[in-house]
Length: 124
Image (cartoon, rainbow, N blue to C red; front, top):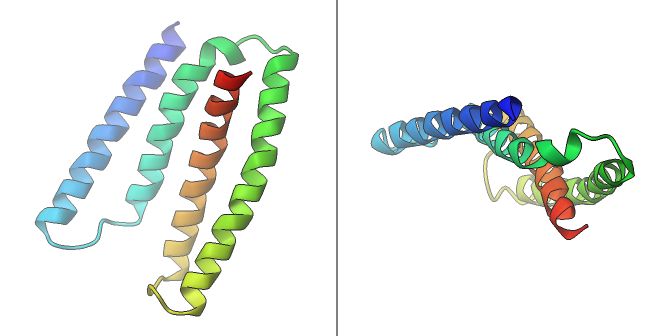
């Protein structure tokens, strides 16, 4: 139970940090720093882990199935993300640096894996 509270506290702190950084970017009339994506994805991860902790604490067949199925779904979601990013870069819809693309892909990976676990845990 202590670990679940710690995840929630870390999620709230991450949410406040992300909100503050986005607010600063809006006030400066600039795009937020790319590291905001990583902090936001880690915030989502903390909230997902707080929800999943009681179920994943016990290492049974159900949690193993949820993890395997979640990674399988995330694989295809990542292929879709790659296709979208390649299209955006190819047709120059947005100008992205290599670091921006890496930040975006890393954030999408974290968010996709943990949200797919939450969705599967609720369905199964």
